[in-house]
Image (cartoon, one colour):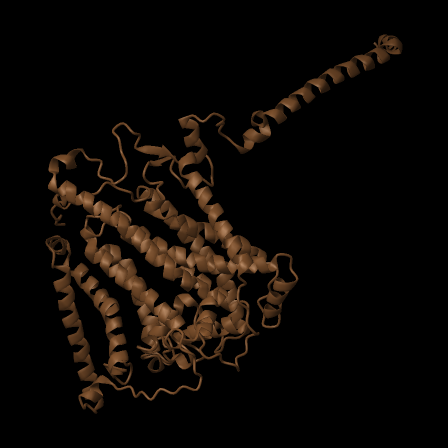
Length: 311
Length: 302
């Protein structure tokens, strides 16, 4: 266990936010889902008791009839904002006094650091370069993520859970987002903590060996099936990808229509909405992990090979 | 006439001077008294009233509302909000903190600009100068850097909270899209700033980042269908980003202009829309009363 090197990585000033993420993201996930559970219990109670549902104020917060429903922004909100600003400023001050922003040697195009890494929030994309070609990992994938995020509210036809924490009423939407969010953060952490010289995989605490060689020959999926002609590879790849989309689409369909509530939501969803959801779910939430597993477990580099692009 | 005036003159002038001085002394005393009064209660003065149009000395409900509505910095808020909407547990305060960090970054960024030349000769030396000679220069740079990192995290958490509370749902779908654009702008702002110190860290991070642009489909010279469309290292999208085929002085200048002018302006515009839409879409989304499955209305067929 190379504690010294591990310490060097996690204490690199620019990596501090990542170490922060390791704590902050699970904390806020817990914080949000805890409130979701409380609301879910209330919902269950009200569903079972329609009489109570008519009179209940429908929040988990304390309430008495006659309490004013609104408060003045001045001072009840502004004091919180003011306090938040002071706390953030104090935090930044302490952080800035104790930790210096990194500054390395002057830029030198003739001296490539190994490994050379992107800024931490893009390390996830750089990590994707292991599994996909740059045109996909660096350009198409980020574009798809942005478009997918923007499409999110337009494909989510669930009218429940608008403005309160809940898990049971929105398992599909929240589940999908959680998978994507945690995948993104996991890739950042792998890219930062587990990638050494030559972007080779080193476990956290394993000494980076600059002379290490990996005798690993990557194969392409068509090779395994003994397909050699260009046409054959192209057609085989197309059908392999098509099959993947059909199988995962079917799997996702089974998952999102399992519970009666989810079936109800599915019935409200139009075909276009559903296909858009399926496309992004298959490509980003299933496709990425699938390709990662293919590469790591079976050393498969490409599935679909054409003269113009490879996937 | 002339004689009369002259006649009164001899004795009259002195008397009049005495009268006038007496008068002036009284007036001066009165005005000083008034000035003292004004200093004690500046709200009464014309100067004060010209700046603060609406008097709100006493904490009546009306005055509390006016305090928010008549102030340009506070008028983004409504006068009153739902009693539960001020709970930290609901909003996590991440949107507001992101905006505050943007302000901190603008402030420290403007100060940094006073000490920085976006040229290959000067840039790195300016950072050394900033770190070692400028009073509080190191603190300034540190605060700018850490606030930027923190803002990336708070923007992510803001998005996370909005998903968990379903706040992107009708009628807030469009504002969610504006938010996604703001997320992208935040990342781009951070990324363009990375190159500016012109050190190894920034240079190689930006080299790695912009090399991906080579592979852009159709408009990159190594991307699918790029070469077929006549893309070379000297006319593709990477060339446009860097102002050249390598990360050099033009790239530094472009990063600087994107970082200090173009992207902050764009972000400010989108932020304006974002905040305006929060109000127009009915304020923050909750905490709303829970809705029951049995209350789902049947699908509207359009």
